[in-house]
Amino acid sequence: MESWMLMILVFMPGVWSGDWGVTFGYQCALRGGSVVMQCSYDYPWRDTVTQVGWSRPLFTSGTWRLHPLPSLPSPPDFEYLGNLHHNCSLKINNIQPTDERKYYFSFVTTSDRSTSKTYAYLSVNELIAVLKPSTVKEGDDFSLTCVSDCPTPTTIVWFKDGQKVPTPGFLVRREDAGSYFCAVLGQETVRSNSVTLNVQYGPGNMAISVDDQQFTEGSSVKLTCSSVANPAADNYTWYKRTDSPSSSSWLQVGWGQVLSLPSVEASHTGLYL
Ligand SMILES: *[C@@H]1O[C@H](CO)[C@@H](O)[C@H](O)[C@H]1NC(C)=O
Image 1 (cartoon, rainbow, N blue to C red):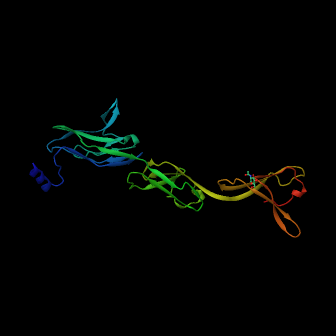
Image 2: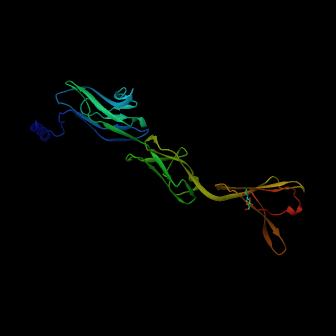
Image 3: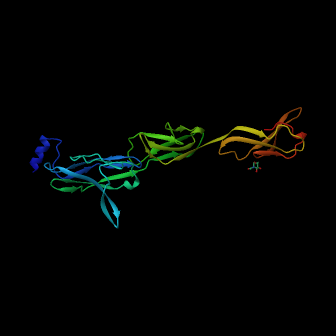
């Protein structure tokens, strides 16, 4: 028997050994994506395969039982890519966390039937967007990375507020603020969680608005100061310029976003800042 085997290996490389057996590859997949479970099987060379099937154990009524995968070889979720010879590869689409389990292959030949003694294990992982730090000051460094527990040979794409953007990073601008997630290029159903980038900057675009430009004596006047800042300004200081023949200076006249002058009189005339 051994010398017969050796003959085969030496003189006909690439020919199957003729023993019963199934060989699987390890599979790591991302939720929402698809994966091909590589599989090959072997049987006595005189036999012809009449039936193939994949099954997985499910816990029902208190015990684990092997349940055949539905409707092989047809899509959408399970596609048999193998054949009735030696290839038993299975494609799983739209992978969900519940697909993380053991998969067994079985087949029937003209002489016997066989179920794999070992199994293919599908490990299902998430794509995770990591933002460090999540709050930055304009001009600071930040990093946005996309990680998973599967080896990721695939290209990653980034989305910001739902729109595809070039990989962000490095020095942050205020328009970079938003909600980001990453996805696998060409398989954009594989998406990460969303992370929010908060960009802080000091007040700018300051403006004063007045309810009217001319006032009669005794009326009340409100001056409102606005600015653009993140976080928003929490206080304002009001100044009024006082001119005397020798000098001019700025006098503090109040605090808060609104400066109220309840009853204007001639002495209120002036330049406010
Ligand atoms: C604004 O600042 C002034 C002076 O420090 C303070 O008296 C006032 O309470 C502050 N107002 C608010 C709304 O914080």
